[in-house]
Image (cartoon, rainbow, N blue to C red; front, side, top):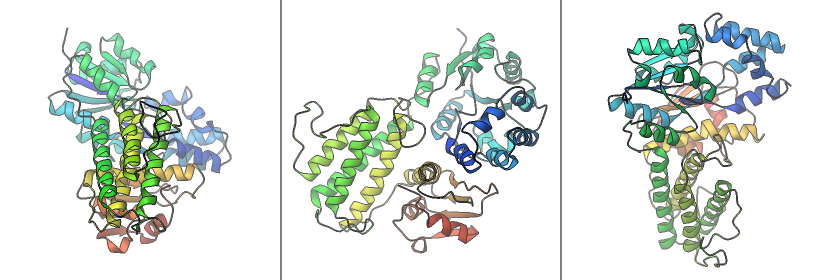
Length: 439
């Protein structure tokens, strides 16, 4: 059997993900029925015209506005924010480092070059192919033949993954190995079964390890610290209150993950076992049950989650950041000098602005912010963007250590106590920080 020499990725739904609450917010504000905009945007022949380059993206958005009778709503929809999938990009990096060609094939518009440049995708894969330039869109076999010709490869030498099963057809016709993408763990497994040597260094498992380290740290504070100690960062709480809160959060997350609401966080093998009387034992018992349940599930295992995607991987990420921030609270309460690891803190910033804040808006807890704020961290990769409704470029860029930015966003430190550089409209940043960005 011919060996795999290239891995071809779809873009939307695989390498980047859009925020559904953005569309919901627009339709609600403009008094449009749910689903109105995308029902028009993705209907034939309009979608075919834009993805094969017969009309521009601007013309597409304008046509959507005309058909729904609301140009402002269409323009706002056209500024749909997205989040790159760090796990998939890490896998692409790993494949490329191992000598495998990596490329992207997307049913895209003339906006694709600027969109992929906005998060540096062109520097992390060998080629990006967009249907608007090819003239044919997936699943048309001619789109895949164009990619093969450009790469100088035969079909059996290429592995293709797409989140739409329908769009795999053209690749199958040319003999490519294909995979219906539902998550990075499944993709890794499919690559391995196709003979691609991919060591499993998924951030899912790495995050579980980091979560367990944070749990160990919190337990250590409970074993040695004064439970009546005041927690300065959580007004009105003692260390005992904080421990009770985190224990309850772990228990609730376990219920969401397993679709149960456990009555007793004690011995999971004995439902009749009494709840441990000792505070540290009670915390540890609940945390261990959560970690065990997370380790037993792949990242893409379906479950109810606090923000998209509805998978176990979301709960790993959420509980890592929840436990980490409360470990910081606990260590501070007993006179320690807590520190946060830069990469974890940077991802925590991305969670706040890209997942928790949109959830606050979606639940009606806060009004959406109009201005976009970008957070940059020189001590970690990437940046984080809080997307405003105005649709213009960033009003302000804030640069500082990832730890400092995370603690500011969580209300643990005032902005004027950390070293940051602010470029742009300071009032836009102040408005964001005055908003309850987290639950």
